[in-house]
Image 1 (cartoon, rainbow, N blue to C red):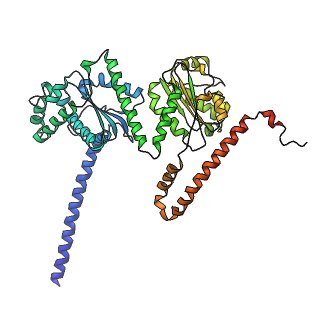
Image 2: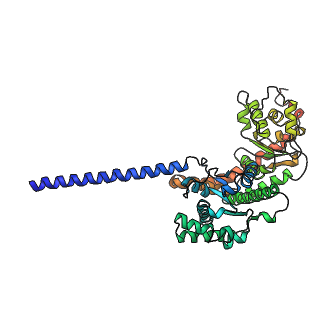
Image 3: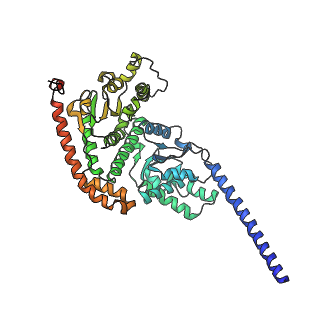
Length: 453
């Protein structure tokens, strides 16, 4: 009996000891988590993804070149992550690492003392890791530093210089220093920009870099589109719409995108809009014009949104039925890209975009609608693009993709859909041909239709 009591007491003691250990380790975990949170509290909030991450030595370029480049990228509507904090300590918070991972392009600005910062060197190693793991684009910028100094670790990049002092003062392992040296050499061998070869001013150099980033992003967007089902042909459609816009021609150009509901008009307009919005002083994409204009004061709200976005001025107020002259003058000085999506009434066109002369030379307007006759009231007939839907093979593949989770339910429906798609094509062709014939009839032809004789 005594042995049983002893055994029970022993078990209780073991449980208490394990509980104390659990509480102790939980407190350690909580404190480390709190420390991480403290490190990351002043990091800009993360988004789903970024176009560009800028790695730079704050003391060298924060107030000059880097800030000018950041502003130029934002002006071109390029979503850019730039850490505004002063460097504190040697550890990079997880939020900053995630910002690197979420970026399509990493700009690494090599300046005089870039290599003297463990912060910058760890960023560089992580950036090159992202390049290797998922193809992140890396663009080195050699700002007032010779690329060969970075590649061969000379001058301020020498192992006997900052890198050696880092190892000595911060007790960095030789393995980590070796990783940094390899990263510097690899980055220096990537094609990039060197300010000593620039022609013109530093402002010109900043613009050259920003434009190169934009070109690479557009190329990335096109390759992303190719991965979508049936989108290869959509890329050709996007290029056809771009040709109708005549982007290099003077004057104001208006293009219409026509097709039935759900066929992809908005998708095409959105793709063109994002590919070229950076080429304009201002841009505005008004979605669901038909639906929004039906609400109380809907058209007024749409016009207010349009004017405010084009002038980049949220204080603009229009209390009259027409746009005041002083606001019209500002619009005429703003080269704009405008998309009116899903228009279904002439009043919407007149109220929102009116005559071409109210916009600056070089402005472009894209209008999507289901009614071709309505588009022809604003757009030249040869400037209207007729959207074709996915052919039956692609449509059935899309159907099959969505039905894959319910194979039993949709197996028989798939066979029926294959036949139905052919009949839909026939009916659509019939509808379009009849509609075109009806449009050719004058109103007088039909004025007596239905009357008793």
